Picture 1 (tube, rainbow, N blue to C red):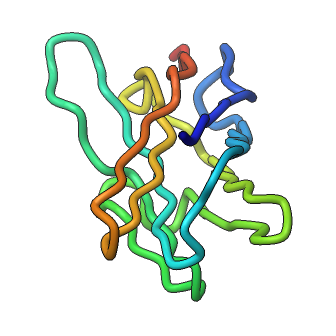
Picture 2 (picture 1 turned 180 degrees about the vertical axis):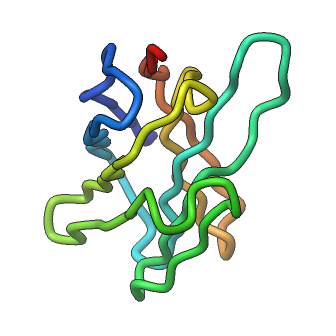
Length: 117
């Protein structure tokens, strides 16, 4: 079983920055994708950014140039550096680990990010 524990959310003014962290523990298949998703009230959960175990990244158009995803494979940790935050970035952010070869798919408990205007 895999556990994902997020930290780093909070309240910030528009234009500010936050860094989210997610630590994975348990039996983790080495080939995996770590990602961040978010869900705002009344909206569907959407992918924000993802990074493969090889370091390839993918971003939602709405965050390109503002957010940076990175990972430390030795620590099984993924980070999301969020700069130039906007009120529309307000959401609960969820960490996700997916191993395509095994079908494993895990979610963290979520961390609230609130951006005030």
